Length: 259
Length: 265
Image (cartoon, rainbow over all chains, first blue to last red; front, side):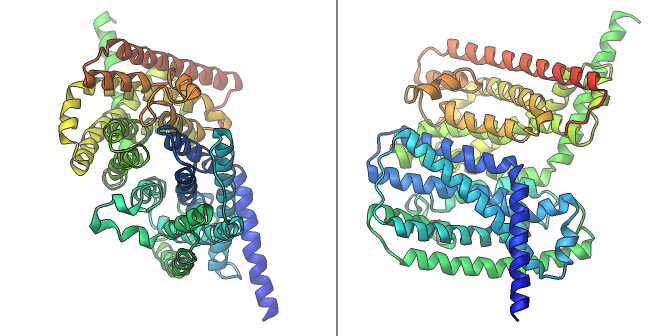
């Protein structure tokens, strides 16, 4: 049992490392993790003078919005890239479970995306001289840990969906703005029509946004974090089921290695 | 061969390049993907920036942000597809055919880009109409219609600068970065969301890029202020972008001729 676990952990970490090496040359990480937070942050905070509390809320929301974009293009694209490189069949026909490889790759890509987004957001906050005081830094760290795990599961789920179409790149671009509008991040659910206000509740990043904003301004509540964790587990299960189904579909259609 | 024959031959060649661009567009962006992916993206982009305007700067900023959102959807979502033209030559290793043809390489590129631009403008009108209906800006959208020609100039300038940027950097593996950087610079510096006069360095960058002056002309026209100077500046930047595209293609043609291959990787 121990050998089995060790082998699975090894495969997971190897997949994560391999994906991180791929990320070194991937311009989309720089674009979505680097440029997007800068653009959104500058236009959001410079249009009108803001109170420190409101500035902190906007910074967290911009970071998570950029993370969503980065997730779509990085971890959301891991399987699409494997198919383009002609290595998808090897990933799903190995000794270890293909799901471990998928989550390992998604984890590696997410770490890169989160790191880039976080670094750029912090650098922009410092350059703009935004007045932000963090009330609970330790809980911020916990929140960021949940961000990484949640984005990994979310990315794995998206990667499986994008595998179903040869126009994955176009669909990836199309998925950005629905969450920008309906995700409850930069646009609070209260500005949405009443019949759409349930949508942000399905996105773990929305709950993490609430938790992090509370941890910054002192209104800490663990309930949003707990909901984000539950949603992350649901994403993971959905990713696992979708992966099995999409690989089965790709095999049936003979598109496993067809870019 | 008479001058008339020569002209009709050139016209035929250009028309063939446009027809090729149309077919190329429909393969790269099939109608179903345009309808279900690009169109909703454009509408949601306009909706996002308009509502964000109200959230971060109050209800008075919504109208300003709506016009900016329209411009961002036009350029960063619709017109940006023109960069697929130089990309296609890179991915399918066909640049040697373009540069050794009778039609000048830059003319072939621009002619192939024309259908992309046409689809982008058509989509823009539909996206703008849908977004205006969702946001309750029907009246404003109608007031913008007489100024559609300024949006066309902005689209042309953006398309040509996009082609220039993609072509110039295509050999440096920065082909995906260049158009995206242009997109984010437009979001940041065009005055689409952040009004001019707020951040000096943003104003400085924006003033030499497409969109900013055209947008200023549209805002001035709607407010009944003089708009001609800004519109002329936008046209100048559009022409300068066309020249940059020409220089970029000449640079790549020279490079390919000197090295004897079109391997951009």
